[in-house]
Image (cartoon, rainbow over all chains, first blue to last red; front, side):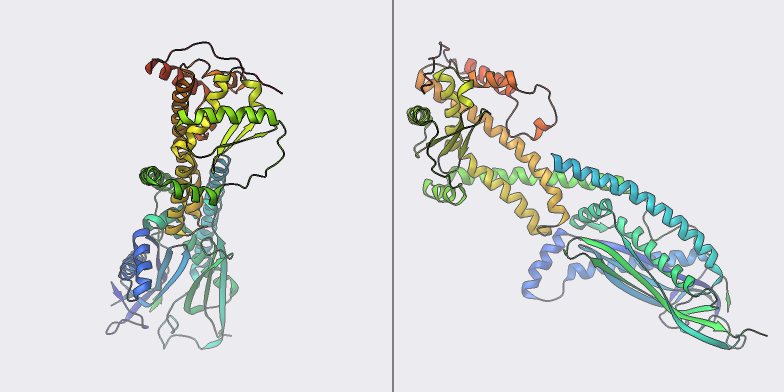
Length: 104
Length: 153
Length: 271
């Protein structure tokens, strides 16, 4: 499935527009990652544990959005935007939304 | 012992009334989404339609819809337990799904005569009542440009 | 392009597992982990409590003991009698620290050992015992708490689990509050074990002082007569085992240790 964050898929024409689709997950970290993060706060640097966690969550959210687009009969999603926010103690919501279209 | 019973009571209350409120909200959302399906909405900056066939735009305005949804005690406990072991927090997934769809519906309802809504964006933020560990509610705002085409006289 | 809208038939953005099942599963798992950690930490506390030197114990006691107001005793002769009996028991009990008896006026029969070598005895207690042996058993039970350093152990356990939870998830987080009932349940079981151990030690002390075990169960039997008999779940969370069970345990200990049972000396309650 094509995904772009511009108005169209380069080299293709949009035939039909199906509407807005979105995918979201809410993921929590576990205490192990918390403790490592606490230690990293002392020495600084990338929190690999959290990066991996959010990376996984983002991929899962994208999959959900693509599944929704497929249900509508689309084969591409344009103008995709991402958003991350913290919604509960120790949990972050990732959601991604875009316009589902059929390109040819 | 009394504390434990009180806690069980609050969790049960949260669970039953929370489920009730949630299923009622979802029914309302599904019904209204069907009603508003006719209003084209896109996250693109360009209106839907081929450039040559579209009527000129008479006017446009920024429209928005927002909602603040709160969680019940049961969901909060579930999130607290989840944040220890990690994984998907299912209780909040339904919460945010409802909030987002409701915000988009309110956006559409705020401009009933619009012909299209373009450049749709969504923002989420959490509103807590001060203590950092207990998140009270979540606000979602959906905003976009509502386009009104010129009517053929 | 044309606009062909449709709504998805099923919602992919939510999971369809029943939340109650997830909740119970997580709760059971975490409660089991918490109890296991509690048990493991408890063993550590026991090792430390056994090896703490008396000087450090005195310092800890001073830090946590309540400042008892030195009131004018309301029954000086009875208090003196109790103090004398306690001092007699100390050698058999294996307690060397100074123990001070304080009598308080109350109808409820109770006695409590507080850190720092203080024992509070309610005046209602003297109405429940008729023999010197029976009274000696109650005092010996409190002395056994000092000998076993039960206060130190209880303090260590309570602090450790809540501190662990607070360190992991924040002091006022929902998880810490969730762990409080679990902590109470674990602590109650532990407390009941310590009370049983104190009962056994008191039996040995009384047999050492008087040469026989007659009258040891007198107080518990008197309490049983007036106690609520129903086995409610509250007993699971109670700090002491059920009186019935304590009497049974003592009687079987008397048989196992083959202690002689002779008539008890009547108590001179004085005035």
